Length: 534
Image (cartoon, rainbow, N blue to C red):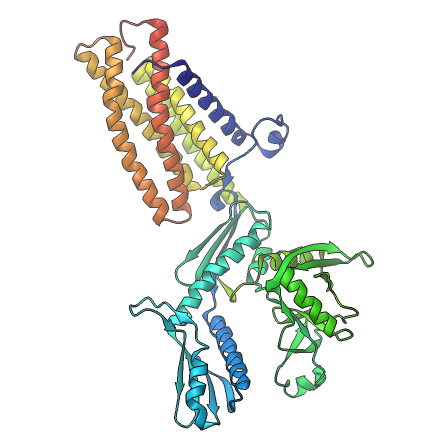
Protein backbone atom coordinates (compact mmCIF):
# COMPACT_ATOMS: atom_id res chain seq x y z
CA UNK A 1 0.00 0.00 0.00
CA UNK A 2 2.95 2.35 0.57
CA UNK A 3 4.65 1.59 -2.77
CA UNK A 4 4.05 4.04 -5.61
CA UNK A 5 5.37 3.54 -9.11
CA UNK A 6 7.35 6.55 -10.37
CA UNK A 7 4.71 7.37 -13.01
CA UNK A 8 2.01 7.44 -10.32
CA UNK A 9 4.04 9.87 -8.22
CA UNK A 10 4.53 12.15 -11.23
CA UNK A 11 0.82 11.97 -12.13
CA UNK A 12 -0.31 12.84 -8.58
CA UNK A 13 2.15 15.73 -8.29
CA UNK A 14 1.12 17.13 -11.70
CA UNK A 15 -2.55 16.90 -10.75
CA UNK A 16 -1.91 18.80 -7.53
CA UNK A 17 0.08 21.51 -9.33
CA UNK A 18 -2.58 21.87 -12.05
CA UNK A 19 -5.27 22.21 -9.37
CA UNK A 20 -3.38 25.03 -7.67
CA UNK A 21 -2.67 26.81 -10.98
CA UNK A 22 -6.32 26.71 -12.12
CA UNK A 23 -7.59 27.73 -8.66
CA UNK A 24 -5.22 30.72 -8.28
CA UNK A 25 -7.06 33.09 -10.73
CA UNK A 26 -9.91 33.24 -8.20
CA UNK A 27 -7.57 35.02 -5.78
CA UNK A 28 -7.06 37.99 -8.17
CA UNK A 29 -9.39 40.73 -9.33
CA UNK A 30 -9.93 41.35 -13.05
CA UNK A 31 -7.24 44.03 -13.37
CA UNK A 32 -4.52 41.93 -11.71
CA UNK A 33 -5.65 38.90 -13.70
CA UNK A 34 -5.25 40.76 -16.99
CA UNK A 35 -1.64 41.60 -16.12
CA UNK A 36 -0.66 37.93 -15.67
CA UNK A 37 1.23 36.15 -18.48
CA UNK A 38 -0.96 34.96 -21.32
CA UNK A 39 -0.08 31.27 -20.95
CA UNK A 40 -1.57 31.10 -17.45
CA UNK A 41 -5.25 30.12 -17.07
CA UNK A 42 -7.56 33.04 -16.29
CA UNK A 43 -10.92 31.32 -15.83
CA UNK A 44 -12.69 32.34 -12.64
CA UNK A 45 -15.65 30.89 -10.81
CA UNK A 46 -18.92 32.51 -11.89
CA UNK A 47 -20.68 34.03 -8.89
CA UNK A 48 -24.40 33.46 -8.53
CA UNK A 49 -27.19 35.97 -8.12
CA UNK A 50 -26.88 36.00 -4.33
CA UNK A 51 -23.15 36.82 -4.51
CA UNK A 52 -22.80 39.40 -7.31
CA UNK A 53 -26.35 40.74 -7.58
CA UNK A 54 -28.53 40.77 -10.67
CA UNK A 55 -32.13 40.35 -11.80
CA UNK A 56 -34.72 37.77 -10.72
CA UNK A 57 -37.92 37.47 -12.75
CA UNK A 58 -40.78 35.01 -12.56
CA UNK A 59 -42.74 35.04 -15.84
CA UNK A 60 -46.14 33.54 -16.54
CA UNK A 61 -47.29 32.33 -19.96
CA UNK A 62 -50.70 33.89 -20.60
CA UNK A 63 -53.28 31.14 -21.08
CA UNK A 64 -55.82 33.59 -22.51
CA UNK A 65 -53.33 34.65 -25.18
CA UNK A 66 -52.84 31.03 -26.25
CA UNK A 67 -56.59 30.42 -26.37
CA UNK A 68 -57.13 33.60 -28.40
CA UNK A 69 -54.42 32.65 -30.92
CA UNK A 70 -55.79 29.12 -31.31
CA UNK A 71 -59.35 30.41 -31.75
CA UNK A 72 -58.17 32.82 -34.44
CA UNK A 73 -56.36 29.98 -36.23
CA UNK A 74 -59.44 27.73 -36.04
CA UNK A 75 -61.66 30.53 -37.32
CA UNK A 76 -59.34 31.14 -40.29
CA UNK A 77 -59.21 27.39 -41.00
CA UNK A 78 -63.01 27.18 -40.92
CA UNK A 79 -63.39 30.12 -43.30
CA UNK A 80 -60.83 28.72 -45.77
CA UNK A 81 -62.13 25.14 -45.61
CA UNK A 82 -65.78 26.02 -46.17
CA UNK A 83 -65.01 28.53 -48.93
CA UNK A 84 -62.82 26.01 -50.77
CA UNK A 85 -65.68 23.50 -50.72
CA UNK A 86 -68.29 26.19 -51.48
CA UNK A 87 -70.36 25.42 -48.41
CA UNK A 88 -72.43 28.43 -47.40
CA UNK A 89 -72.25 29.71 -43.82
CA UNK A 90 -73.06 32.80 -41.78
CA UNK A 91 -72.29 34.36 -38.38
CA UNK A 92 -68.68 33.12 -38.12
CA UNK A 93 -67.14 34.41 -34.89
CA UNK A 94 -65.77 33.48 -31.47
CA UNK A 95 -67.71 33.06 -28.29
CA UNK A 96 -65.94 32.15 -25.06
CA UNK A 97 -63.71 29.15 -25.76
CA UNK A 98 -65.37 28.26 -29.05
CA UNK A 99 -65.78 29.29 -32.68
CA UNK A 100 -69.42 29.48 -33.70
CA UNK A 101 -71.16 29.65 -37.10
CA UNK A 102 -74.29 28.48 -38.88
CA UNK A 103 -74.24 26.27 -41.98
CA UNK A 104 -76.80 27.57 -44.47
CA UNK A 105 -76.83 24.50 -46.73
CA UNK A 106 -78.50 21.92 -44.44
CA UNK A 107 -78.14 19.15 -47.06
CA UNK A 108 -74.35 19.30 -46.62
CA UNK A 109 -74.22 19.27 -42.80
CA UNK A 110 -72.56 15.84 -42.63
CA UNK A 111 -69.95 16.85 -45.20
CA UNK A 112 -69.28 20.09 -43.34
CA UNK A 113 -68.85 18.23 -40.03
CA UNK A 114 -66.33 15.86 -41.61
CA UNK A 115 -64.34 18.76 -43.02
CA UNK A 116 -64.37 20.69 -39.76
CA UNK A 117 -63.26 17.64 -37.74
CA UNK A 118 -60.13 17.55 -39.90
CA UNK A 119 -59.15 20.97 -38.50
CA UNK A 120 -58.53 19.51 -35.03
CA UNK A 121 -55.01 18.54 -33.92
CA UNK A 122 -54.48 15.22 -32.10
CA UNK A 123 -53.61 15.51 -28.41
CA UNK A 124 -52.16 12.94 -25.99
CA UNK A 125 -54.22 13.52 -22.85
CA UNK A 126 -52.79 12.60 -19.45
CA UNK A 127 -55.66 10.22 -18.90
CA UNK A 128 -55.94 6.81 -20.55
CA UNK A 129 -57.64 6.45 -23.87
CA UNK A 130 -55.02 7.41 -26.45
CA UNK A 131 -55.15 10.45 -28.69
CA UNK A 132 -58.02 12.91 -28.72
CA UNK A 133 -58.69 16.05 -30.81
CA UNK A 134 -57.98 19.50 -29.40
CA UNK A 135 -61.20 20.82 -30.95
CA UNK A 136 -64.62 19.34 -30.23
CA UNK A 137 -67.02 19.86 -33.19
CA UNK A 138 -70.79 19.96 -32.54
CA UNK A 139 -73.28 20.39 -35.42
CA UNK A 140 -77.00 20.80 -34.68
CA UNK A 141 -79.77 19.80 -37.05
CA UNK A 142 -80.54 23.47 -37.79
CA UNK A 143 -76.93 24.09 -38.89
CA UNK A 144 -75.67 25.77 -35.69
CA UNK A 145 -72.03 24.66 -35.39
CA UNK A 146 -69.62 25.09 -32.46
CA UNK A 147 -65.93 24.21 -32.47
CA UNK A 148 -64.89 24.19 -28.79
CA UNK A 149 -61.27 24.01 -27.63
CA UNK A 150 -60.80 21.03 -25.30
CA UNK A 151 -59.07 21.32 -21.92
CA UNK A 152 -56.54 18.65 -22.95
CA UNK A 153 -55.66 20.63 -26.05
CA UNK A 154 -55.21 23.89 -24.13
CA UNK A 155 -53.10 22.14 -21.46
CA UNK A 156 -50.80 20.61 -24.06
CA UNK A 157 -50.39 23.88 -25.94
CA UNK A 158 -49.64 25.65 -22.64
CA UNK A 159 -46.96 23.08 -21.81
CA UNK A 160 -45.43 23.40 -25.28
CA UNK A 161 -45.53 27.20 -25.03
CA UNK A 162 -43.60 27.11 -21.74
CA UNK A 163 -40.89 24.87 -23.24
CA UNK A 164 -40.65 27.03 -26.38
CA UNK A 165 -40.55 30.20 -24.25
CA UNK A 166 -37.63 28.81 -22.24
CA UNK A 167 -35.60 28.22 -25.40
CA UNK A 168 -36.44 31.65 -26.86
CA UNK A 169 -35.63 33.37 -23.55
CA UNK A 170 -32.33 31.48 -23.35
CA UNK A 171 -31.33 32.60 -26.87
CA UNK A 172 -32.23 36.22 -26.13
CA UNK A 173 -30.34 36.36 -22.83
CA UNK A 174 -27.29 34.55 -24.22
CA UNK A 175 -26.94 37.25 -26.89
CA UNK A 176 -26.94 39.93 -24.19
CA UNK A 177 -23.49 38.64 -23.18
CA UNK A 178 -24.40 37.76 -19.58
CA UNK A 179 -22.84 34.78 -17.81
CA UNK A 180 -24.56 31.67 -16.49
CA UNK A 181 -28.24 32.74 -16.43
CA UNK A 182 -30.67 30.41 -14.69
CA UNK A 183 -33.73 29.71 -16.86
CA UNK A 184 -36.07 26.95 -15.73
CA UNK A 185 -39.69 25.92 -15.57
CA UNK A 186 -41.69 26.66 -12.43
CA UNK A 187 -44.99 24.83 -12.10
CA UNK A 188 -47.34 24.43 -15.05
CA UNK A 189 -47.17 27.82 -16.73
CA UNK A 190 -44.26 29.81 -15.27
CA UNK A 191 -40.61 30.40 -16.15
CA UNK A 192 -37.97 31.48 -13.62
CA UNK A 193 -35.20 33.74 -14.97
CA UNK A 194 -32.16 34.74 -12.90
CA UNK A 195 -29.36 36.75 -14.53
CA UNK A 196 -26.36 37.38 -12.24
CA UNK A 197 -24.38 40.58 -12.73
CA UNK A 198 -26.98 42.32 -14.91
CA UNK A 199 -26.87 46.09 -14.29
CA UNK A 200 -29.95 46.99 -16.38
CA UNK A 201 -32.99 44.94 -15.22
CA UNK A 202 -35.42 47.16 -17.18
CA UNK A 203 -33.70 46.26 -20.46
CA UNK A 204 -34.06 42.58 -19.57
CA UNK A 205 -37.77 43.00 -18.86
CA UNK A 206 -38.35 44.83 -22.14
CA UNK A 207 -36.42 42.14 -24.00
CA UNK A 208 -38.34 39.22 -22.46
CA UNK A 209 -41.85 40.66 -22.54
CA UNK A 210 -41.79 41.50 -26.26
CA UNK A 211 -43.25 38.68 -28.33
CA UNK A 212 -41.19 39.70 -31.40
CA UNK A 213 -43.62 38.36 -34.03
CA UNK A 214 -42.34 39.93 -37.26
CA UNK A 215 -44.40 39.96 -40.48
CA UNK A 216 -44.62 41.82 -43.76
CA UNK A 217 -48.05 42.99 -45.02
CA UNK A 218 -49.31 44.91 -48.03
CA UNK A 219 -51.23 48.08 -47.22
CA UNK A 220 -54.92 47.92 -48.08
CA UNK A 221 -56.41 50.42 -50.56
CA UNK A 222 -60.06 49.52 -49.84
CA UNK A 223 -60.42 52.62 -47.66
CA UNK A 224 -58.23 55.12 -45.87
CA UNK A 225 -57.02 54.42 -42.29
CA UNK A 226 -58.99 57.44 -41.10
CA UNK A 227 -62.25 56.00 -42.50
CA UNK A 228 -61.46 52.66 -40.85
CA UNK A 229 -60.95 54.43 -37.52
CA UNK A 230 -64.33 56.15 -37.82
CA UNK A 231 -66.15 53.00 -38.85
CA UNK A 232 -65.04 49.39 -39.14
CA UNK A 233 -62.10 47.91 -41.03
CA UNK A 234 -63.11 45.73 -44.02
CA UNK A 235 -62.97 41.96 -43.66
CA UNK A 236 -59.44 40.68 -44.27
CA UNK A 237 -57.76 43.88 -43.08
CA UNK A 238 -56.40 45.16 -39.76
CA UNK A 239 -55.99 48.69 -38.47
CA UNK A 240 -52.54 48.99 -36.89
CA UNK A 241 -50.68 51.92 -35.36
CA UNK A 242 -47.06 52.87 -35.94
CA UNK A 243 -44.32 53.42 -33.36
CA UNK A 244 -44.16 57.13 -34.19
CA UNK A 245 -45.04 59.84 -31.71
CA UNK A 246 -47.87 60.58 -32.29
CA UNK A 247 -48.70 57.15 -33.80
CA UNK A 248 -49.82 56.95 -37.43
CA UNK A 249 -52.65 54.57 -38.41
CA UNK A 250 -52.17 52.01 -41.21
CA UNK A 251 -54.75 49.73 -42.78
CA UNK A 252 -52.95 46.52 -43.70
CA UNK A 253 -54.03 43.25 -45.24
CA UNK A 254 -54.45 40.57 -42.59
CA UNK A 255 -52.63 37.94 -44.66
CA UNK A 256 -48.87 38.27 -44.25
CA UNK A 257 -46.66 38.18 -47.34
CA UNK A 258 -43.94 36.55 -45.25
CA UNK A 259 -43.28 36.04 -41.53
CA UNK A 260 -40.22 36.25 -39.29
CA UNK A 261 -40.09 32.47 -38.98
CA UNK A 262 -38.12 32.42 -42.24
CA UNK A 263 -35.42 34.84 -41.07
CA UNK A 264 -31.90 33.40 -41.14
CA UNK A 265 -30.10 36.30 -39.46
CA UNK A 266 -30.53 39.86 -38.21
CA UNK A 267 -27.74 42.28 -37.28
CA UNK A 268 -27.64 45.92 -36.15
CA UNK A 269 -25.90 48.41 -38.42
CA UNK A 270 -25.92 51.99 -39.71
CA UNK A 271 -27.40 53.42 -42.90
CA UNK A 272 -24.53 54.50 -45.16
CA UNK A 273 -26.33 57.66 -46.25
CA UNK A 274 -28.10 58.92 -43.12
CA UNK A 275 -25.88 57.13 -40.53
CA UNK A 276 -28.99 56.29 -38.52
CA UNK A 277 -29.12 52.89 -36.72
CA UNK A 278 -30.87 50.16 -38.71
CA UNK A 279 -31.43 46.41 -38.54
CA UNK A 280 -30.19 44.37 -41.49
CA UNK A 281 -32.03 41.07 -42.01
CA UNK A 282 -31.54 38.04 -44.23
CA UNK A 283 -34.06 35.30 -45.10
CA UNK A 284 -33.36 31.61 -45.52
CA UNK A 285 -33.66 30.04 -48.98
CA UNK A 286 -37.43 29.50 -48.81
CA UNK A 287 -37.99 32.93 -47.30
CA UNK A 288 -35.81 34.64 -49.92
CA UNK A 289 -37.80 32.98 -52.70
CA UNK A 290 -41.15 33.99 -51.18
CA UNK A 291 -39.96 37.54 -50.47
CA UNK A 292 -38.60 37.92 -54.00
CA UNK A 293 -41.87 36.70 -55.52
CA UNK A 294 -43.98 38.96 -53.28
CA UNK A 295 -41.95 42.07 -54.08
CA UNK A 296 -41.88 41.24 -57.80
CA UNK A 297 -45.68 41.02 -57.93
CA UNK A 298 -46.23 44.23 -55.96
CA UNK A 299 -43.73 46.75 -57.36
CA UNK A 300 -44.92 50.29 -56.67
CA UNK A 301 -47.13 49.31 -53.74
CA UNK A 302 -46.39 50.20 -50.11
CA UNK A 303 -46.01 47.44 -47.57
CA UNK A 304 -45.76 47.45 -43.78
CA UNK A 305 -43.11 45.85 -41.60
CA UNK A 306 -45.06 44.81 -38.51
CA UNK A 307 -43.61 43.81 -35.14
CA UNK A 308 -46.08 42.67 -32.46
CA UNK A 309 -49.03 44.36 -34.20
CA UNK A 310 -47.19 47.68 -34.48
CA UNK A 311 -45.91 49.12 -37.76
CA UNK A 312 -42.16 49.77 -37.65
CA UNK A 313 -42.00 51.27 -41.13
CA UNK A 314 -44.02 51.28 -44.34
CA UNK A 315 -41.77 51.72 -47.37
CA UNK A 316 -42.79 51.47 -51.03
CA UNK A 317 -41.52 48.50 -53.06
CA UNK A 318 -39.41 50.36 -55.68
CA UNK A 319 -38.08 47.22 -57.34
CA UNK A 320 -38.06 43.44 -56.77
CA UNK A 321 -35.92 42.40 -53.78
CA UNK A 322 -34.37 39.17 -55.02
CA UNK A 323 -31.32 38.85 -52.77
CA UNK A 324 -33.29 37.69 -49.73
CA UNK A 325 -32.02 40.53 -47.56
CA UNK A 326 -33.11 44.00 -46.56
CA UNK A 327 -33.05 46.52 -43.77
CA UNK A 328 -35.46 47.95 -41.23
CA UNK A 329 -35.25 51.62 -40.25
CA UNK A 330 -37.53 53.32 -37.81
CA UNK A 331 -35.73 55.98 -35.80
CA UNK A 332 -33.93 53.43 -33.62
CA UNK A 333 -31.24 54.20 -31.09
CA UNK A 334 -28.08 52.09 -31.35
CA UNK A 335 -29.19 50.01 -28.35
CA UNK A 336 -32.73 49.73 -29.73
CA UNK A 337 -31.44 48.43 -33.06
CA UNK A 338 -29.25 45.90 -31.25
CA UNK A 339 -32.15 44.71 -29.08
CA UNK A 340 -34.44 44.35 -32.11
CA UNK A 341 -31.77 42.30 -33.88
CA UNK A 342 -31.50 40.07 -30.79
CA UNK A 343 -35.27 39.59 -30.74
CA UNK A 344 -35.42 38.68 -34.43
CA UNK A 345 -32.48 36.26 -34.22
CA UNK A 346 -33.90 34.54 -31.14
CA UNK A 347 -37.35 34.12 -32.67
CA UNK A 348 -40.83 34.98 -31.51
CA UNK A 349 -42.37 33.88 -28.25
CA UNK A 350 -45.32 31.50 -28.68
CA UNK A 351 -47.44 33.53 -26.24
CA UNK A 352 -47.41 36.69 -24.14
CA UNK A 353 -45.38 36.63 -20.92
CA UNK A 354 -46.41 38.51 -17.79
CA UNK A 355 -44.05 39.32 -14.91
CA UNK A 356 -45.62 37.98 -11.70
CA UNK A 357 -42.55 38.43 -9.47
CA UNK A 358 -39.57 40.73 -9.78
CA UNK A 359 -36.54 41.14 -7.54
CA UNK A 360 -33.30 43.01 -8.04
CA UNK A 361 -30.35 41.97 -5.87
CA UNK A 362 -27.79 44.72 -5.49
CA UNK A 363 -24.05 43.98 -5.69
CA UNK A 364 -23.61 45.40 -2.19
CA UNK A 365 -25.68 42.59 -0.70
CA UNK A 366 -23.64 40.10 -2.72
CA UNK A 367 -20.40 41.64 -1.47
CA UNK A 368 -21.60 41.28 2.12
CA UNK A 369 -22.43 37.63 1.48
CA UNK A 370 -19.00 36.98 -0.04
CA UNK A 371 -17.25 38.72 2.87
CA UNK A 372 -19.27 36.74 5.42
CA UNK A 373 -18.55 33.49 3.57
CA UNK A 374 -14.85 34.29 3.40
CA UNK A 375 -14.67 35.03 7.11
CA UNK A 376 -16.53 31.84 7.99
CA UNK A 377 -14.38 29.78 5.61
CA UNK A 378 -11.09 31.24 6.87
CA UNK A 379 -11.99 30.77 10.53
CA UNK A 380 -13.16 27.21 9.91
CA UNK A 381 -10.07 26.33 7.82
CA UNK A 382 -7.64 27.74 10.39
CA UNK A 383 -9.43 25.86 13.18
CA UNK A 384 -9.24 22.59 11.25
CA UNK A 385 -5.56 23.06 10.31
CA UNK A 386 -4.57 23.83 13.92
CA UNK A 387 -6.57 20.90 15.28
CA UNK A 388 -5.00 18.42 12.86
CA UNK A 389 -1.46 19.68 13.55
CA UNK A 390 -1.94 19.49 17.33
CA UNK A 391 -3.70 16.13 17.28
CA UNK A 392 -1.54 14.20 14.82
CA UNK A 393 1.78 16.04 14.59
CA UNK A 394 3.65 15.34 11.36
CA UNK A 395 0.80 13.27 9.96
CA UNK A 396 -1.51 16.19 10.74
CA UNK A 397 0.68 18.47 8.59
CA UNK A 398 0.45 15.92 5.75
CA UNK A 399 -3.34 15.99 6.14
CA UNK A 400 -3.30 19.80 6.02
CA UNK A 401 -1.35 19.79 2.76
CA UNK A 402 -3.87 17.33 1.31
CA UNK A 403 -6.71 19.54 2.56
CA UNK A 404 -5.30 22.61 0.77
CA UNK A 405 -4.94 20.62 -2.45
CA UNK A 406 -8.49 19.34 -1.95
CA UNK A 407 -9.94 22.86 -1.82
CA UNK A 408 -7.78 23.81 -4.82
CA UNK A 409 -9.20 20.87 -6.77
CA UNK A 410 -12.76 21.99 -6.00
CA UNK A 411 -12.10 25.61 -7.04
CA UNK A 412 -10.25 24.48 -10.17
CA UNK A 413 -13.09 22.15 -11.20
CA UNK A 414 -15.69 24.90 -10.69
CA UNK A 415 -13.56 27.33 -12.73
CA UNK A 416 -12.98 24.90 -15.61
CA UNK A 417 -16.64 23.81 -15.74
CA UNK A 418 -17.85 27.41 -15.57
CA UNK A 419 -20.19 26.42 -12.73
CA UNK A 420 -22.06 29.11 -10.80
CA UNK A 421 -21.08 29.48 -7.15
CA UNK A 422 -23.85 30.50 -4.77
CA UNK A 423 -24.08 30.73 -0.97
CA UNK A 424 -25.28 27.10 -0.76
CA UNK A 425 -22.28 26.22 -2.93
CA UNK A 426 -19.95 27.82 -0.38
CA UNK A 427 -21.71 25.75 2.26
CA UNK A 428 -20.96 22.65 0.17
CA UNK A 429 -17.25 23.54 0.08
CA UNK A 430 -17.15 24.08 3.85
CA UNK A 431 -18.91 20.74 4.37
CA UNK A 432 -16.38 19.07 2.08
CA UNK A 433 -13.51 20.41 4.23
CA UNK A 434 -15.04 18.73 7.26
CA UNK A 435 -15.54 15.47 5.37
CA UNK A 436 -11.93 15.51 4.13
CA UNK A 437 -10.62 15.92 7.68
CA UNK A 438 -12.96 13.18 8.85
CA UNK A 439 -11.44 10.76 6.33
CA UNK A 440 -7.91 11.54 7.57
CA UNK A 441 -9.03 11.10 11.17
CA UNK A 442 -10.39 7.64 10.32
CA UNK A 443 -7.05 6.65 8.74
CA UNK A 444 -4.87 7.99 11.53
CA UNK A 445 -7.00 6.54 14.31
CA UNK A 446 -6.89 3.14 12.59
CA UNK A 447 -3.08 3.40 12.37
CA UNK A 448 -2.95 4.18 16.11
CA UNK A 449 -5.12 1.18 16.81
CA UNK A 450 -2.80 -1.10 14.81
CA UNK A 451 0.22 0.25 16.72
CA UNK A 452 -1.49 -0.57 20.02
CA UNK A 453 -2.00 -4.11 18.75
CA UNK A 454 1.76 -4.45 18.38
CA UNK A 455 2.28 -4.02 14.66
CA UNK A 456 5.48 -2.50 13.36
CA UNK A 457 5.52 1.03 11.94
CA UNK A 458 5.23 0.28 8.23
CA UNK A 459 2.77 -2.59 8.77
CA UNK A 460 0.57 -0.35 10.97
CA UNK A 461 0.48 2.37 8.30
CA UNK A 462 -0.21 -0.17 5.55
CA UNK A 463 -3.07 -1.88 7.40
CA UNK A 464 -4.46 1.44 8.64
CA UNK A 465 -4.90 2.79 5.11
CA UNK A 466 -6.23 -0.53 3.78
CA UNK A 467 -8.85 -1.03 6.51
CA UNK A 468 -9.97 2.61 6.61
CA UNK A 469 -10.59 2.65 2.84
CA UNK A 470 -13.82 0.68 3.11
CA UNK A 471 -15.26 3.03 5.71
CA UNK A 472 -14.21 6.10 3.67
CA UNK A 473 -15.81 4.73 0.51
CA UNK A 474 -19.03 3.78 2.32
CA UNK A 475 -19.40 7.23 3.85
CA UNK A 476 -18.58 9.15 0.68
CA UNK A 477 -20.61 6.99 -1.72
CA UNK A 478 -23.76 7.42 0.36
CA UNK A 479 -23.16 11.18 0.45
CA UNK A 480 -22.55 11.18 -3.33
CA UNK A 481 -25.90 9.41 -3.84
CA UNK A 482 -27.58 12.13 -1.78
CA UNK A 483 -25.85 14.81 -3.88
CA UNK A 484 -27.06 13.19 -7.13
CA UNK A 485 -30.64 13.05 -5.82
CA UNK A 486 -30.44 16.71 -4.77
CA UNK A 487 -29.21 17.65 -8.25
CA UNK A 488 -31.94 15.66 -10.02
CA UNK A 489 -34.85 16.80 -7.86
CA UNK A 490 -33.64 20.22 -6.74
CA UNK A 491 -33.39 23.51 -8.60
CA UNK A 492 -31.37 26.71 -8.48
CA UNK A 493 -29.23 27.04 -5.32
CA UNK A 494 -29.98 23.45 -4.30
CA UNK A 495 -28.35 22.22 -7.50
CA UNK A 496 -25.37 24.48 -6.86
CA UNK A 497 -24.93 22.92 -3.44
CA UNK A 498 -25.20 19.43 -4.96
CA UNK A 499 -22.56 20.19 -7.63
CA UNK A 500 -19.97 21.52 -5.17
CA UNK A 501 -20.69 18.66 -2.78
CA UNK A 502 -20.28 16.02 -5.51
CA UNK A 503 -17.00 17.55 -6.73
CA UNK A 504 -15.82 17.77 -3.13
CA UNK A 505 -16.58 14.11 -2.47
CA UNK A 506 -14.51 12.95 -5.45
CA UNK A 507 -11.60 15.25 -4.56
CA UNK A 508 -11.82 14.19 -0.91
CA UNK A 509 -11.39 10.51 -1.70
CA UNK A 510 -8.43 11.35 -3.92
CA UNK A 511 -6.62 13.67 -1.50
CA UNK A 512 -7.44 11.91 1.78
CA UNK A 513 -6.48 8.45 0.57
CA UNK A 514 -4.10 8.83 -2.39
CA UNK A 515 -2.30 12.15 -1.76
CA UNK A 516 -1.95 11.72 2.02
CA UNK A 517 -0.72 8.15 1.50
CA UNK A 518 1.87 9.37 -1.01
CA UNK A 519 3.18 12.03 1.40
CA UNK A 520 3.44 9.48 4.22
CA UNK A 521 5.09 6.93 1.91
CA UNK A 522 7.73 9.48 0.82
CA UNK A 523 8.33 10.41 4.48
CA UNK A 524 8.72 6.74 5.49
CA UNK A 525 11.09 6.09 2.59
CA UNK A 526 13.34 9.02 3.52
CA UNK A 527 13.26 8.78 7.36
CA UNK A 528 12.89 5.01 7.98
CA UNK A 529 11.09 5.75 11.30
CA UNK A 530 10.94 3.25 14.17
CA UNK A 531 8.04 5.09 15.85
CA UNK A 532 5.11 7.03 14.48
CA UNK A 533 4.73 10.78 15.22
CA UNK A 534 1.06 10.46 16.19
